[in-house]
Image (cartoon, rainbow, N blue to C red; front, side, top):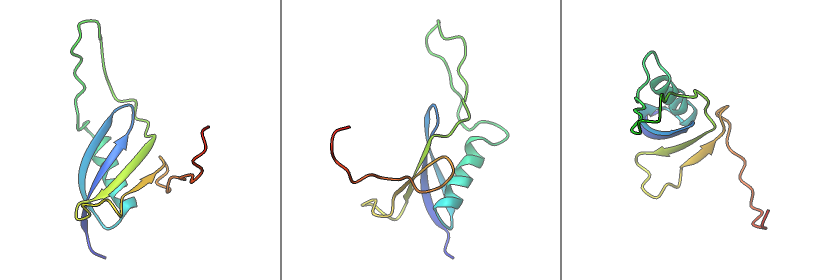
Length: 96
């Protein structure tokens, strides 16, 4: 299987776009998790208002969006749940 570049948007309390090389979307999400939640957090959250005492990761992923680097039209982009399973997209366009 060919390794390709993927851009993984990890939706936690914050969104972090991570560039990883992987064989497929699942492997890309797992690689992004390793970067984001590894030994040291990949992004530092710095409070900019004096009233904010602290900011840190919630370490809860709610969704992934995986884009493939060689897909400028996003035809192979997919949404996944926190369990790496494809997100269910409803074709029902009626108002909720």
